[in-house]
Length: 97
Image 1 (cartoon, one colour):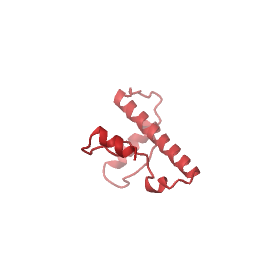
Image 2 (spheres, one colour):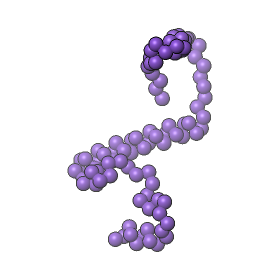
Image 3 (cartoon, rainbow, N blue to C red):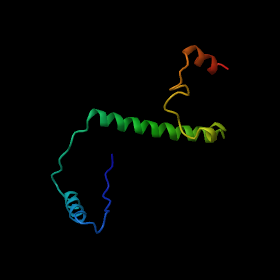
Image 4 (tube, one colour):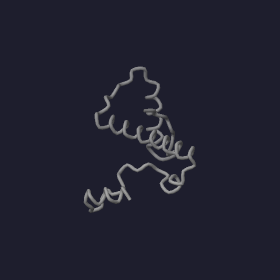
């Protein structure tokens, strides 16, 4: 994870002081390390994997000049039948067509 200092809200009362204190905090030698929760770690890993999957998908489809990329430019996180009230048999039949 990367944290960057981005000054904003210039001229708004209270924010100038908050910006100054935050900037001072970046110069502290004693930095408190806050443990990453399991759920935050898993979310970060999931997002990283999805980002890598998307890049690989676009690269592969572009290399093949595949028309599917124009129809579906992003990887799908759920199957096409998600949320539909259809039986497993119906899904298999449609997939095999």
